[in-house]
Length: 372
Image (cartoon, rainbow, N blue to C red):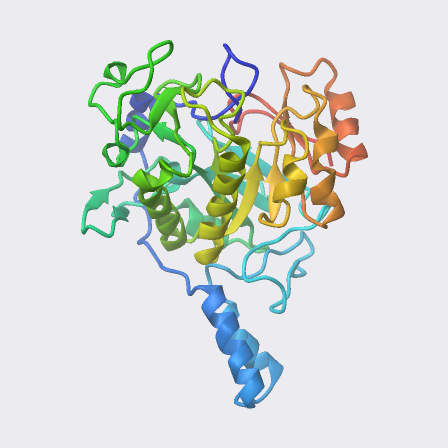
């Protein structure tokens, strides 16, 4: 989401550590972790087999790409929306996914047969989930309040797409991997906040406006100190069977992050986030960033779709035309308490070719108005 109330730009995390802990105590017992076969590897094998004449027929060669965790998204009629010849990850076109929802905190409601759900990664984490690192460190991830729901959603027919929300440009003090970010302190109030400069050697900046969340120093010279922690989250998303990720908080510019972030560094971080997601066979969306004119056009080639917040409220919907022109869906969200006329906001979404929603803030399962 964007930055918080003391600034005009939103960024998400919304839920306190206490609320998450209470929810996890009541979480249902999940199914075991499962690893999906990476489609990129399968696609490479298919190409090699085709060139050497090893595949007896196209249908036999296509089978490896249809793993249970990454089978094609389907429309309400049950017709696949993608074919094996398309990208190895989910790449929706404008108007293809009109029945979707975005829920990042309680109350959740996953009862509707949506085409796509976008839900917090850690809230979906099953019992036994772990974050692993190259130095051998392993961090246990508590089971989330929606533990096991990815498998349940994927078992539906037609099968919905499950996108997992992940903070990639912000530190979250309440996450199990918080200690992997240089500058972490056991007490969050011990981490310098505005107007005090970030500590020397710390990658943790000023608060985003959401409790327990801080901007990260995404400059090229600093990101190597924490990037592995972010990619470990992507590894977890792949193992859990997420079809894609919604990486948030990559747009600190204009949000008073505590660091001077050049535009070139912000753009290169967005591209690296997309590259790392694709390396794991995950679909990836451009989250916000459209507030800087021309940014969407610069990044459209790196991402499969976009999720902008408040483009009606801030008169920015036209910035997403590069995605629509490229045949890539834009899942726009405006908030019901921020737009005076919800029907008019929906008309603006449709006029720009966006697949929009009006939601409460933060987004839950309690309210949803589709603009489709």
